[in-house]
Length: 233
Image 1 (cartoon, rainbow, N blue to C red):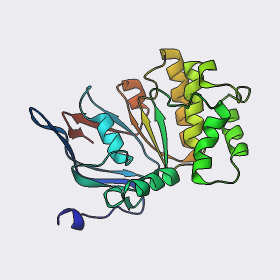
Image 2 (cartoon, one colour; image 1 turned 90 degrees about the vertical axis):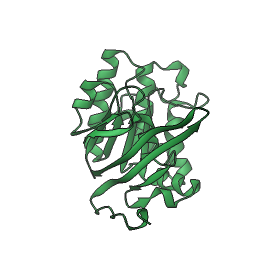
Image 3 (cartoon, rainbow, N blue to C red; image 1 turned 45 degrees about the vertical axis):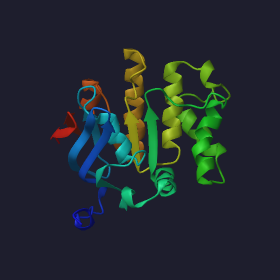
């Protein structure tokens, strides 16, 4: 009953999180990954989720994006309560509202840079997929690499394709999980600059997981996790 009468998110709230918990059963007993996490993120905010390895950062990101389901509590993403939706419903919300950038890029190796960026538009059912994909790849500096496959691109170039793919759908929220984790310092810094430039231009709400304090400091707000509990918001 408590969840059903939890306060609703304000219209200007991108994410409304109440009593969020994640527990799994192991042969040795119950493992608490997240415990009673609650916060709001306003539309247009940039927020870094930080904490030591194993503190629950990536699990929290997965729950916020509807990639995983909580053991308790709820997430409202742009007014949609994810726990009331089935997997198809959560996939619809992600397709309409969410972009992703991952540490390991997650490009499809059999598709060119252009085809990777067109893919989310095609999955959404857009009629015009070529022109927007070309335009965003040009914006990230890959206008001459449209026909290249991921194996023909450097790590930094692959992450630029991933950024283009994330922003091409004009998402209201962008989730980034260690976006510079597989890049050297110089390349990582260039990707950070590009990420925040694209984010500012699009007015997207940015939520990123990082162990990089420099990257975290670029965000307007920190959410710090310690052993599954929110200790600083």
